[in-house]
Length: 379
Image (cartoon, rainbow, N blue to C red; front, side, top):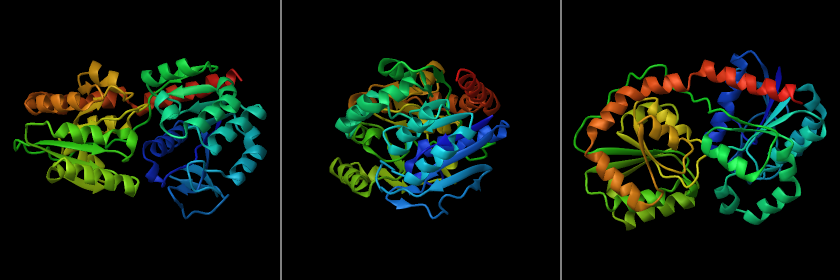
């Protein structure tokens, strides 16, 4: 089985957050599963470019990756070199897995694969939700969807990572088939970190890319009505103008003294998560939410909005709290959780083994291999 993964970005372009990590981890796991994997991507790294050789395959953590130069520096990621190479080589692959949508790498790569008769599976990575349609560039998205996107999606299989995303796809299109398999999540083999001391202060953490859809304004406003001792750590980076706007909001709301901005973290993120009592994710839209599993994987409970793909999983397994995406709901629950430290301790004891069982890499490998096999056999 020869697989081609196509995504506009690939590590070390960590600036794009979860999707880049998810595609990289999937590619590495499929190599471990015994399949032949290649990745076509661009040099995209936010407004900058990765310093890698163009058009030459190199090994990145065991995966054969080819980076192609892009001409545009925005989220269109137009790369004629990638598309030309794909046109000439696509028939050598059994299946093409396209990640994300609304960029010229994803849409045109899908078109090439369909045109050349190679089976395609698309992982929208949250880009085909109702929120995505209306959030930015909604006119151009509607035009693209009407002119070419809808037809391509109908000729492809769709891979989603949560029940919430599956429902969104069923409401939008009628693809060949929808596969619902969660992301691979890299977790530490052991959790040797010291637990946070109970000093009466509820230690909150937000760990994600900082952007509008993450809902930090909701959290900031909610904290003005919190009547327990708390401290919020923000671990992540984003557009400097938007980050400065959030800093100004924190000062305006008089919560800045209770907020620490760490910036982007990578190597020590699991220890940082473990040192906090509660990971908070107030997103307006999240197809999965890698950080939810990362947090629970080290024993830290979560408080998330109902718009996060893993909300049902968290609620059904008693691993945290889910609320409406408004300030009142978040402030009410933060006050409640601050007075229920026994629940935080229970989750710290139970979550690690639960996550290891439910997101077992060997089990997930088999599910992905089976998905690809079905797509290949069905043409």
